[in-house]
Image (tube, rainbow, N blue to C red; front, side, top):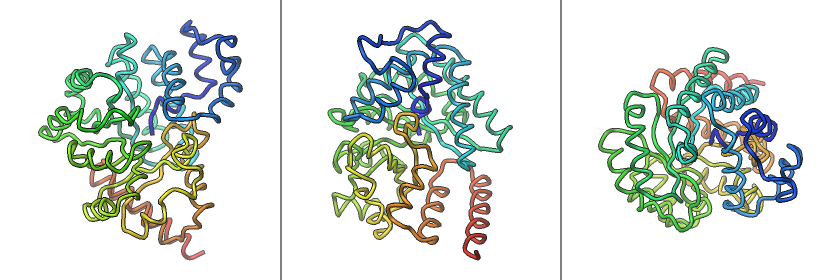
Length: 333
């Protein structure tokens, strides 16, 4: 889940007024006539790049520590209502530093919100720094250097790779990922979302990822299915996002059943919920309504999510204990 992807139209317009940021005029783009018009436009994305156009416009209103805190806090409040107890969330520092916003401003705001979520809800949170793959590779390297202290002291949990997948293969970022691996920093990457199975293979071979984000095209390659299952990678699936961005026509076209049958570990996530019309519970419900999974199958999914998380062993133990309680309660009903 990308924190910038939780920027609701209401908050976007509010921050634009507060920070005196000019949004496109309704004459230029009717979607910006009001928050409701913008939300309606979000329902009609034609591709990942179409979404990214609005995604980056939205980011332009985020300028201060308080703005970033407000953004993340709004998400954590919504996630809490959906029953979330642990959240590993991504963010895109280059999208902000490229606008003149200091890296520390971004991180401080998000860290403040994380601390509030822990205090208010008992929710554990981890921040994952993502590189924007459509930007020059040297910018990813400089971003990594700026964040290295935070990555090593635990302020940030690891690195990821997002943005336009086509035309920007994983191997472009091999050097920065190798440096991260050598210093013990956790690694994930978007692969097999709009790209094909080769993108996933590239992320495994060249980036030595520990998790695979999206990964729906794994199902197109028999050998890759076996490898991902055998090596135990966690695939972080985002069902409603894949539909909204037309990676698949409907939730039923996702390889949920294939992954379950072939032993691939995966979790269910919300990606950019303010843009894709579905927060975490909406995604869980969409999967259940489509596939009619059993309690045992949901137990497998939840267990994989906990085991594949980047929280420490004590927190994993607490999450597994809570999961066992839920399974026992509803299995006996």
